[in-house]
Image 1: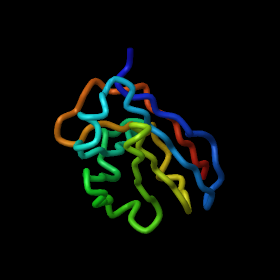
Image 2 (image 1 turned 90 degrees about the vertical axis):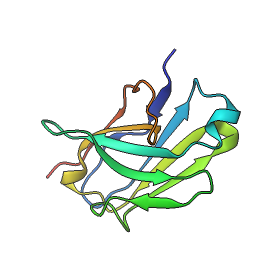
Image 3 (image 1 turned 30 degrees about the vertical axis):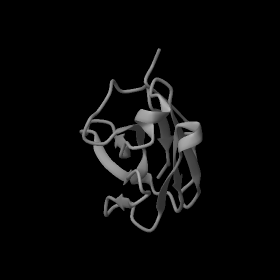
Image 4 (image 1 turned 180 degrees about the horizontal axis):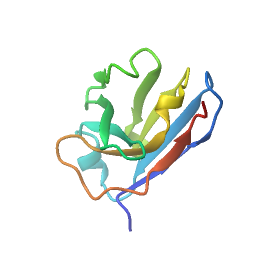
Length: 117
């Protein structure tokens, strides 16, 4: 059983929007709720990079490249983290993953986001 199930990716034109979801399928609620969660992405030929984080208290932080365009949120009852992505650009093309920040579990398969140039 995988630790994280990411979904919501797809092909979207520049300027469009997508909402990604990540369900922490193997984390129990008492572990998920206090965890700082994060979204990462990996573009072809590049290393995985941190995109956004959200603490247990819902304090958020973003990479400069996505600030003011992306919004991370969480639903503890569903053990799910979301990433609302607006004003998408071709450079946002990547596979997107979620994980626990600072204490990563095995990575899920991710969800592909493609923004053509």
